[in-house]
Image (cartoon, rainbow, N blue to C red; front, side, top):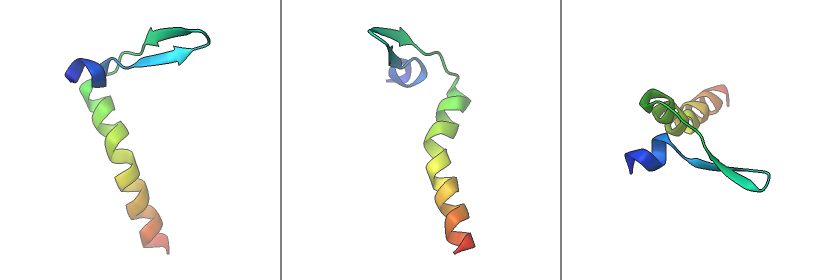
Length: 44
């Protein structure tokens, strides 16, 4: 599972490439919607 999250396969044109990410980048990617919703709720 760690390999799938840190090295996702992304389709570019007709090929699939492996996008390397660090664990902190993956954590931020999954936490971003939570922070964004908190921000928009506080503005409303």
